[in-house]
Length: 197
Image 1 (cartoon, rainbow, N blue to C red):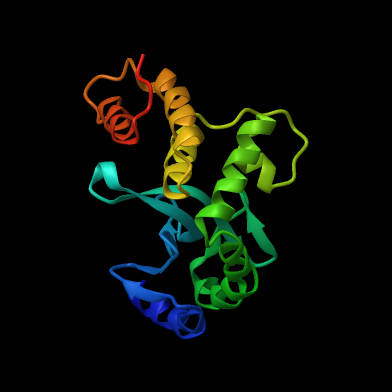
Image 2: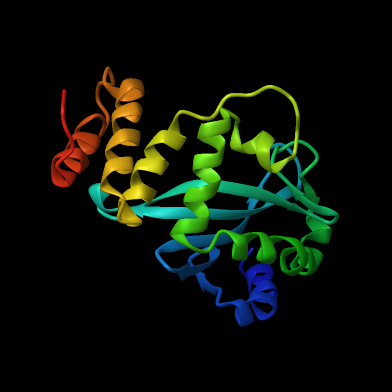
């Protein structure tokens, strides 16, 4: 795998990606973007992922993936079916990464751009997978988008919207036991001066 990454890095280094452990990554404007390959556990095939994430200051800077795409020879996929590369073809994935993944990642390289996509999903009540796949199939936004929206609004300096989305996220996590929620969200809301019920 490291040999494949070294082949890929020569193609994506001009876009600011470097090898870190077993992934290619770059930091842009508070956004973390990665490219990596994931092996199929059942056969000798791989998926190539391009991800967009944000760091959560309330989880010691842990990165949360907001969106991801599967890189394929003919474009990006937003569902995992039909997204597997035969092992022998994996080295050639670099051209698809540069052609399809890098422009998609560029579109999602600022807090404001990422926030606009998240809010569009929430306002239209549509799953981000279906939105990016340009599918008309009925769907609902993933609950986690409320959490991402609250963080992105906070990073964008919009306290009121961050409080509103955090309160909506709390509805999904208030009964959580044995996890970091809802304490994490309560800390964020207290720091922002949100009204707590």
